[in-house]
Image (cartoon, rainbow, N blue to C red; front, side, top):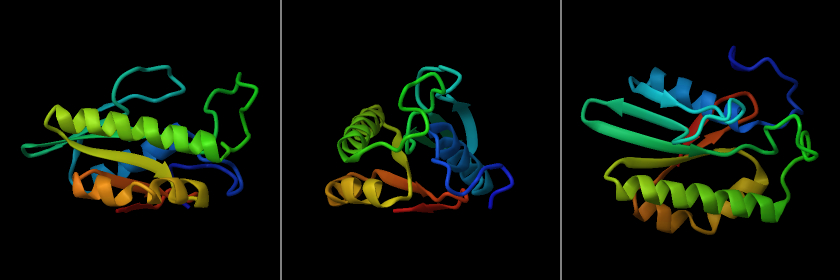
Length: 144
């Protein structure tokens, strides 16, 4: 388990945990994180903006459930249609980042629903050079 996560393995990954895992992964790969917008802090804008030499990377992150402890859905996993909606929103933001000339990425929890939803569009996004950062429950990050 990552030293950054102090959680029970059965707990849902929040958007902030997903983006934090990716942030630390990028820093470990030599990227400089220029900005990070935690969802719980109600910070608006790109979730992660990182730079390495002349490369600019913008990443949109999504979690497994609501990050808001005041939400009636807090602690409950998103269902299939909610996951599809979040993947669609993240894809739109990634396409917007790519349209601005940046490299683009999406950070998602590595679970069956997210893999299934994203799998339907992965060939198209890969063709556009949009990376997906998969975050496991123990904060390991893999990229496709």
